[in-house]
Image (cartoon, rainbow, N blue to C red; front, side, top):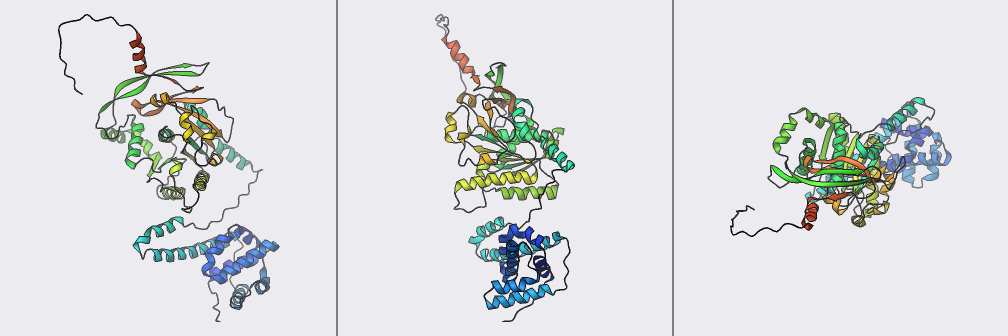
Length: 503
């Protein structure tokens, strides 16, 4: 057979590093399978790199000029043998000099490997787009493409005082500086690279709490990225955000300027027993209108918007990888680097894993990816997850009330439960309790009762420590009590009046 000499200087340089640098081989060894897979279009280069890595694994050194002997001992095919021997001669006797800086060689190999991967991807896409019905498969191939990256060395010098100072100061940062009792239980866990989550049954206020945290962080000049994964439409999410920013309730599908809504009329709290009673009242309040938003945008309060970015997606289409791509786009084009990342919510995210993979493994992978996201961006990632069906009958959730896969508990920095009795669900109260935290001590019998006020679109107007559900007193309860009291009998009258009642 005719053997074509390899004249590409870049390839010769890469193979010289493989031939003579043990450190180079150690650096690329963790990505052996990915690199060899990317080089499969050039079988000679692939086999050469493979032999060098395997020699390093067995003898802890680079093969050097002994590569010709290694090739003869390991290659049985005469055609492959002759090709590899010719390639080895080209590398050994080449005049190309390789820099002593190994980062150059690593960068060269990564670029070459990714170029080969892209070539195969282009061929695959061209085959798919020839048939319009195969376009979704082509898009899936693009989405699943993962370039090869070699992690930087992570050796840490524990005696480096500057490094110690940097790490300690980093963990003292509070990225969501909440006030009140709710702040006492949540604030300590909102440091860089943290992942916190709220667990609750359906319609327990998960979206409201996440949005509340986002706005509180933005008001304190934190950069906040909000990802709506499909629980709400774009219109619903935008209107909800402006409802909290303006401080007026938003009522969809109702052409109302005012509405009668409940509000916390009176709160009584026993400091010793940590028991709370909440009296509910009703009043007419103005409903958020488009003009209110326009007025807000023209005011100084609109400056908060420079701290917020919003991305809305259809349910079960958003992946953590897409979130990563969007964040990188904001960083590059707008110099927007988030400190807080809100994802509403984790359970409806999609994965890039196989369609037939077990759902529990997909859920676990999502939470692993969220943890990595918090670490890579040094941000506080906040999300929510569904509790199981048994939580509907429980006054306070426990660790047993997870849904799908309990391994999500392993990946979070802190997990909080959103608890509501039937009366509390009607009465503007959400009790938040810690299920587990990675750092610090928790008292699981304590809960923080958060009193919301729909008339001001405020999910947390006041918060107090409680032990157990809040007693809710509704106006109709007072009417029931008054109805039991004897009423004086009215004297009969012969006069009758007709009233027109407009329904």
